[in-house]
Length: 281
Image 1: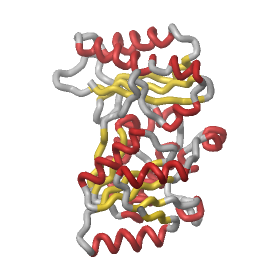
Image 2: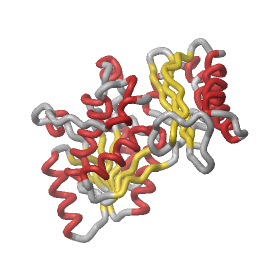
Image 3: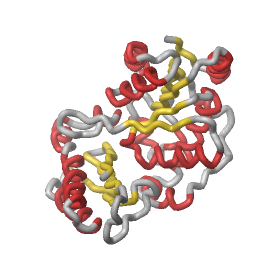
Image 4: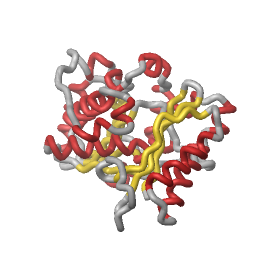
């Protein structure tokens, strides 16, 4: 596995691969890798000739400076995991490589930016779109792989790809979970032992709402049942829990429409660790 640290080096390598007719898969990450990331890499390796994984903790998508400071950084351990998973080249740039000058372009995703993560983390998706578009230009992948845990991010990236006519396929991979249901996340390693035992309640609340929807309950009733369930654990500070159209992520209608897919999405904090999760029904 190659390790590339400069933008020109990545561009030169991916251009050489394209001239050889090789298909390129890209797995963008912020590091502190877990099994969810590795499954993305394995899938990319199975579906492409070469795989680029990137590790870059992107400062422009953090609203909270302390969250950025505390985000886990384990580059050596990450590199040891990626090769056996099928990664061909690891791109680990510094901030000066990704932002040689401060970005002035601003993305506006309309209604998508005014719900859930967009509402609670203003500017977050501008940072995501900026860094992902840079990675697409540098790596020129045929396919790019993202986890469904970040459902709103995947929706934003799909919109950007459509609007800017990027010649690539966005692949969303199902959320990978621990045995007790907790969605795998780099932030999980920051949970205290006590909070780690409480964290599976997030998934349990989502499943409760999903069961209610499948039984014909309204979106409002399913949402309230999940909120009430989480309220039984005072250590969980719920930021939002919404039932939305799975394609647009706009609030679900009062009564579900036949064959409509709904996404139940939440964000909550345990101590100083913010977690997100979702289930699509």
